[in-house]
Image (cartoon, rainbow, N blue to C red):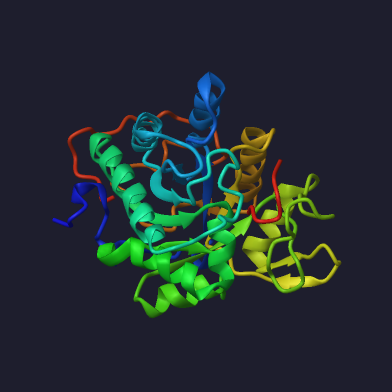
Length: 304
């Protein structure tokens, strides 16, 4: 057993890349919004996505919210990812810390451990790691930040979800970790394949999001804010849970993919059973988990 316990999925030979088989993962950031409204949004999105990026206490979330989301995810056979971030609850993890030191690795490791315990309680396991906000963006370009994130993951062997071809992607691959490419459904892209910084013109896409996602998945390209065609690799599509129409948007995306014959599947292979109990066009069938069975399983420019 791994030092983090059964809450970490170390069965690395199960990782599968599905987009070449007309499959793609759909992920959402969950456990971030407070109160009943947040719980409602989490539950609704978990009926639609195949992977859940669970806030681990840095920018949002606590042990109770982690356990709640993990239980809901396990009931739908949705894969759980650790959504690690800087300690910045006031700025929602979107601010760059004044000082970044060696304690970053220790803190990120602690966040991963807390989620692993929540997963154990929910009879599921952490299946991958995705950074959040400022940590996500800094790791795309800074070797020291990327290395800190990879050191925090340690020898778990967990895959990294990030943008293809970035510093983090390369550092993770050099460390022998599987990497999977993320595409942001409602974020604008620059000609170099990076995201338009929040607050700048074209940072958010409001129209035709589902068709845009389908184009990215099936053609490997997206129209940048400049009008140029940008080549992208897409293993997983992100829907932000804090977007006002996140539930409707995820439903439209899933339905559009289904119309085109593209299945929504996790980029990490799922536990036994149906993926989140969802029928082809996105209508939830509310599958029942087999408990006891083993499961392998104001915004600024720095925020993805």
